[in-house]
Each structure stands twice: as structure tokens, then as C-alpha cells.
Image (cartoon, rainbow, N blue to C red; front, side):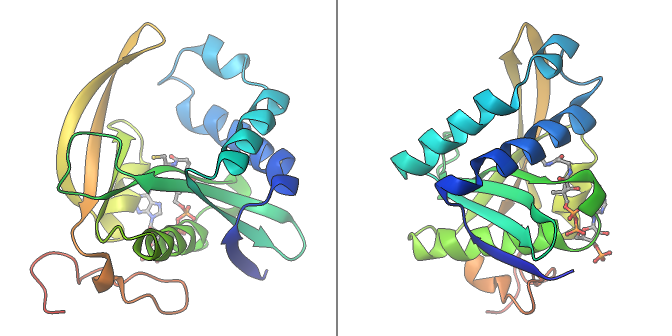
Length: 188
Ligand SMILES: CC(C)(COP(=O)(O)OP(=O)(O)OC[C@H]1O[C@@H](n2cnc3c(N)ncnc32)[C@H](O)[C@@H]1OP(=O)(O)O)[C@@H](O)C(=O)NCCC(=O)NCCS
């Protein structure tokens, strides 16, 4: 397996949409209403990703395997919430189920941290559903608890937790891995 992390192109949208729909269904069954998951469509998702890529107002990164094609996708950009002490925000991060736990999520996050820094955002946060085990992934890769909120969407109230990274310079990315101990209070 050889993974490359790179910006998404419009030609990628069908593969991105397949990864997205598959991981949403696997991840959110039981957390989000069945109807939302069942009615997701790869065609509509592909159109929506194509629109985002054309607009260019989000950074979209993919993880591409030399044989399997796109196996992960993440998007990020300016922080949309009022927690302005974090400049950037990770909006989405999804690795195809068969490719999880092989370092690809961390590699994609590292590539988004680099892209956020290049865009002038030196800190970042992410919101995750509190019952999603992915929250422990963010703890493993150095995120610190940065708040919680209730989101009302699709007729349900969802509890979310934020994780934040104060100083993306401290990521010290090597071989696609993040420096897990350098975020809070460490020396630069
Ligand atoms: C969460 C997700 C992006 C992580 O990506 P991944 O490729 O599976 O994770 P990685 O292999 O890069 O993991 C990096 C480290 O985090 C750890 N880790 C990964 N998932 C974890 C979890 N759920 N709990 C605890 N640790 C976890 C790994 O063990 C690894 O640590 P190690 O190198 O010390 O063993 C991926 O599992 C995913 O797409 N999940 C479903 C969708 C989702 O919930 N996305 C987040 C929405 S906010």
C-alpha cells in the first residue's frame, strides 16, 4: 500500500462520494436518523463535493492508494464557530472502513494541518459527536478538549465535543505522523 496525500480534484468526486457515504453509514448508524443515512446518495454527494472544489473556499485533501484509489478524504478551512481562539477548523475526516487503523487518518490530518498553516491558520479545532469513538483518535493524536455543544439537526439533538490544537507549528510532521506530545505547554 502506497498512500499519497494531495488536494482533491474535480475528477475525484465519485470516489470521494463513495468513501463518504460508506463511512457515514458505518459510523453513524444508531446515532443519526436511519432515514438520513438511507437516503444519502453517491450522485448527490459527488455533485456537492464538485461544487465545493469549484468554489475553492474549503481545503479538501484526499488519501490516494496506488492500487485502490481514494481511500480517505478530509476538508478544513476557517473556523465556522465562535470559538475564535482556534483559527482553523477540520470540517470532515473520513477513512474508508477497510483502510482504518493503518495511519491514514493521522496522515490526512497532518496534511490538513500543513494546508491550514499555509493558508495562515496556526491553530485548529474539530467537532465530533460525543458517542463517536473517533473522539479517542483525536485524543491519541494530541487534540485537547476544547468545549462541547448541542446541535439540533434532522429533528434530533446531538451532543458534540470539540478538540483543539493550539499551535500547528508544533505538529512537527515526520513520515505523515503527528507529534503527539507537543501541543500543550511544550517547548517549540
Ligand atoms: C477516525 C478516523 C478518521 C481515524 O483514522 P484511522 O486511519 O482509522 O486512524 P489512524 O490509523 O491514523 O490512527 C492514528 C492513531 O490513532 C489511534 N486511533 C485510531 N482510531 C482510534 C479510536 N477510535 N480510538 C482510539 N485510538 C484510535 C490509532 O491506534 C493510532 O495510534 P497508534 O499509532 O499509537 O496505534 C477513521 O477511523 C474514520 O474515518 N472513522 C469513521 C469516520 C469518523 O468518525 N470520522 C470522524 C468524524 S469527526
